[in-house]
Image (cartoon, rainbow, N blue to C red):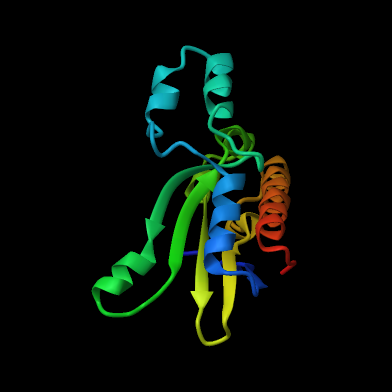
Length: 166
């Protein structure tokens, strides 16, 4: 089976330095990278303990980083000076509000966000695909309502760290 989806792509463009936006983003978002994701669900005995463990790793935005990839480092190896970071981020407590209604939401949570310096325009850009539009194959209204809540939280984070709207 093949389905076509219409995905909404968002970019917040700012004249702030790449380093400043990365610092603001990493301050707003907690991290689970140092302990590794498997330690949280694997170490929890029940829902309450799981919630408590997740909340310890959330930043002020309500998100945590699962993975950080510095694409700029990769490009530098090939002689191209670039500033580009890809983050996988989310909140398992938000994800469960979608997954419990339709397990297929798991393809798109946690979400990915890309921060990069656009040398041609001299701007820093924060880009992501709107989660609810990535779930266009899901008809469950409760799942989609939760996904739209995630959309709003992600947009608020992007506006906070860039100081701009899309």
